Image (cartoon, rainbow, N blue to C red):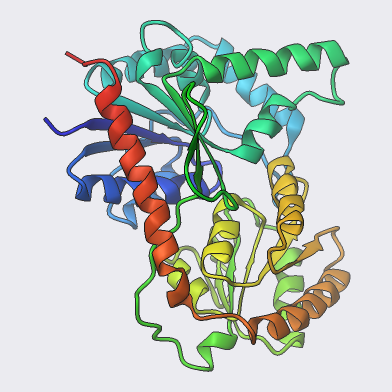
Length: 375
């Protein structure tokens, strides 16, 4: 019997969903049966664009952000607490997931949904649950209360979260800069973040290759930020392919583009927040990237690591002033164009993308076989 996998992808941004659709298609092509769940109607619509039918588990759990992608810590804490301690929320979701677990060989939690964190700790279900997370996300979660609560309380919280995570069947920690797969022998695997495989043939002409491929996740909705970004790119003389659900009402912006990664791979440079997916695309397809940094702990860590690893990039911080932001974007764009002129074409990264995807599908299929029988 082919392995049966349940994949729960949180819809806080879109990186988890993109990874879910990539892996779902790859696993299905390899013969596995994969069902996908998500956590918002917008997330379900996003996945539908890639041919994935993903019912919504519930709409109660979500990390909270403002319209400039700054994480709202107190609002997030409140939302998570209400989700966990109101019985009609997390307990109801666990009851629904219970039936799914019975019919699955493996359950993928991407990334850290509280219901599966708890179920992945409990003896009855933990040997079927594998947690998928970015290395920076786990660090941000475990240090969530550092500096906001007494040191002892913050440390105890971090240790409890780490213990919950490590009780599961397996953990897959991913990062844009990881190389060959690694395994610590105790259920912890390290893999490079998977990336979509672009066409082997570069169809871009010289004009297209001077375009900036812009992707901003749905939390970006502040009009002044978009004004500054558009003006800065225009001042640098760089046309832009603009994608962002929060700006879909603006001229020249698209809510979604299922082929954005291909456009990014053939662009002059990428513009995005420093999420793991965007950084992985830049690393695999050797594209310079302009990182738009806001108050988001996980992404701040990613931006710092991009510098340490020598990834061709510039960082522009949004501080609420559109004119200053536009000038900073224009300066960064000019510098990235110089770097882009020396970059290779997208086809050089195709094999690396294939290898990354192959490592993920092979590991998940192996874990599904090793998990205890469902029947």
